[in-house]
Image (cartoon, one colour):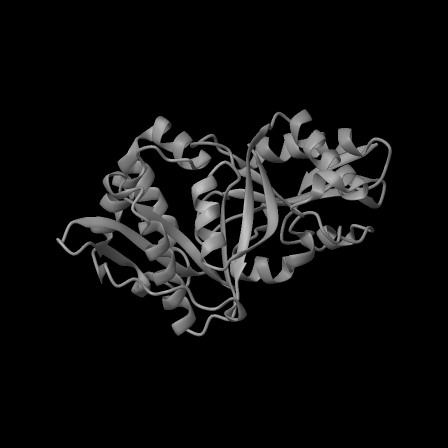
Length: 310
């Protein structure tokens, strides 16, 4: 008989009793140290769930969140084992975990599933991805968006720094306004969904609030103006606990089609490199073809894919 349970401080070690090695190419599991995440507050015992058959852990999952937040924002760990009934077990585990952890305030946390970019063409990888998606879909989730990841390293060379823009500091309110104004015609799936649900200003406040939770980067934010002093957009270089990132880039609708996306991305790359970055990470929706093209022009390399289900 399978038992499904959320953990506590007393039995959190059970999460580590899963007997199978992490997939080398699918999921975040090989990149995450659960003990470190627990110590940092990014995991909590009650956000960690296991399926147990007798004394054997046959599946496990974990929600991740920002330290201090009341609710997690994602599922970034989901392993369903190798049994013939693994999809059914994984689905039941996910159903129960979501029911217990998500309190119903806003959209439920997305399940984030990293994959190689070419996962559809590789049979073994495709099977692992397909099993996890099938389990999540059986639990009531559906594929929301596919995103591609990029990275820049110094050997790609720095893009030309823009000369036609002026960059200035601003208040949080200034940045919220710039972000909200940039949402018109967005190609980002999450942004489009959030603006339809709660409006542009509330979505921008949430976006900027999330960026403020990164341990470094607020001092690097800049508003961009053209030679006439008109606002063009804003940039949000950032640093996660481990990695320099292109946090957010906003081009105002009236200035699209003028190549400013290249200028803003170049300035962000220079700022992060000046701060010592040896690798800069970025991502965008597969459907956001203009942003992908901008990353290509700036010397970023496509290196990963992530499927988000919600």
